[in-house]
Amino acid sequence: MQISAQQLAELLLGIARTQAAMLQGLENEMAGIRGRIIPALQNVAHMRDHPQPTLTDLPVRVLLGTLGRQVPDAAALVRDIERLIGGGGEAAAAAPAAPGENLDFSAPAPKT
Figure (tube, one colour):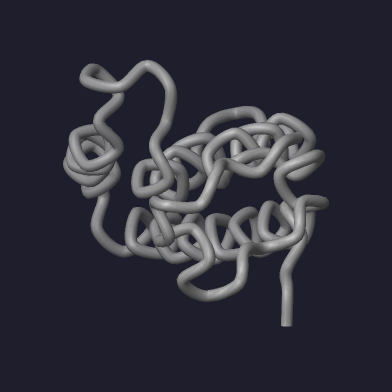
């Protein structure tokens, strides 16, 4: 099974909405907890260290975006996923190398 960047973006958005609903429920039961959880999430998302999200930071950043006033843009999320995974266009269209094919260093490099 292969999942597209669009499907992965929709899945991440759905998970983030679920987590945001849980956080809202906690906030309703324990006033002020949101003020302690948001800084911890920002720390985990490496907001200061990495201006561009890494693949590990992306889910946390989607959650933080969902907790804000605007829902994260699915198209921008798709672009981030494609950038992080290696682009969908020509990289996905290229045929994968056979196992061990690129380990033969005596063979001349294939012409592209």
